[in-house]
Every structure is written in structure tokens, then in C-alpha cells.
Image (tube, rainbow, N blue to C red):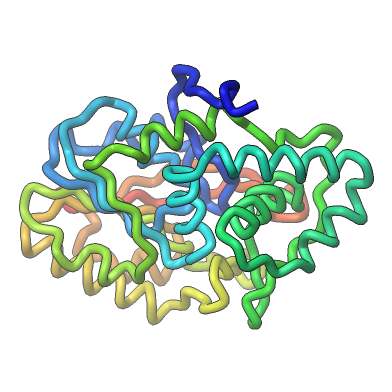
Length: 286
């Protein structure tokens, strides 16, 4: 059975949906990416849409990507090193899910696997079948998103998993689980840093920062701004995505010449009429 898992030529894409994912904004974001850089840093990797897009362009660079969500970081490493085992596990999840979607989904949601393949296949399975592909945990770190309303969810996307695995095996790519400060502390002149943190809420109802069980608050936004200024002084090129909130606009007022407003649809609001017409910011120092 293993022989069917050989690589089919394909451009890698995010293997999970992630709140704030950038697939729909890629044409705009990539227009603002520097033509050349020695190293690429992305410390809020999430689904990796921007990273996969850039690394697929054949650029001559080192890629240092990371995320503080340990389960997500483990998923990247597992797809790199053990993709065939992961596909087998997802095939099992898929078969069981289609026998009884509701009971199987909640059984897996309540499970707490210890093994690497079981942990990662659980994350990918839940991401493909939960409401809006939303990753959210409660204060105890427990995944708590309800079942989504899907007719035929694509739980096992073999072609993309193989493409992602082949890409990540490059010796020029480093994947780590760490806080953003540690991830970008060694960036220097000639490097490019893309920052896509959990967004500063623009309203009380738009507050979604629970990617991990340690929320990303405004003090973290201020910490991020401090690093932005430090990297700027070192000659690092930085591109940052965030919401058009009063706090962020005020925080980055010294870089107002590099602020670009973009229209974006967001899909994690449970009320579909509230998912459109959002203005986001791209902030760059070059």
C-alpha cells in the first residue's frame, strides 16, 4: 500500500485552515515582499500560506519558520519526517468519520493521544471537520470547537501532504516551536521578517486570540512593536499584518509611511453577514 504515497508534482499549500490565514491575500502580500533576502523569518507560521508561496518560487534563501503552538509545530515536523504514517492514520480517521460523523468527531475531540502520529492526525482531522476550521482552545488548553456542517470534508489530501513533505525536507528550512522574540532575535541586515500575529481586536465581538491557551494581548502587541523597532535599526526588512485598530495605528505611527490598507474577508465569525468588508493593515519599514 505504501507505494501509492510517492510524490506527485504539486505546489505545497497550507495543510490546515488557520484563523487569519493569508491564502486570499497572497497576491497583495507577495507584491510587497522584497525581491531578494538572505534569510526569511516567520515566527507566527500558522497555516503557512505566505511561506509556502515564497519557498515555491525557488528563491535562494534560508527559511526559519516557527510557531508557539506546539501541536502545530509538531505537525510540520511530522509531515516532513513521517508523512506516510500520517496519511495512513488520516485514512483511518476518514473511514471512521463517514460511518458516524457526530459521535466520531466528539470522541476524537475528547481524546488526548500521546504518540506523535496520533496527536498530529487528531489535529488535522479536527481541523478538517470542525466548525470553520477554527483552532481554539480553552483556558486548560483543551480544543473546544464544535463539529462543522460539511457534506464531504477532504480529510486526507494526499497530494498536498506529499508536496508539503517534500518541500520541508530541504536543508535550508528550519522549523521550531518558540516565542516570536526568540525566533527573530538573530535577524540581521539582508534578512526579511514576515510578522502575522494574532490580530488586535477591533471590537469586543472580534476578539479571537486563543491560538494557544496563553492569549496574545495588547502587551504582546507592544512587545512585538518593540522588536519591530529593534529589527528596523539593524537594517532588517519587516512586513507585518494586523487589524486596522486604533491601538495598532497609534502604536506604529512612526512607520505610517509604510502602512497599506487592504480589504479582506474573514471567515471565523459565526454570523456570515459579519464576515465581509474588513480592513486590514500591512505595515512595512522599507
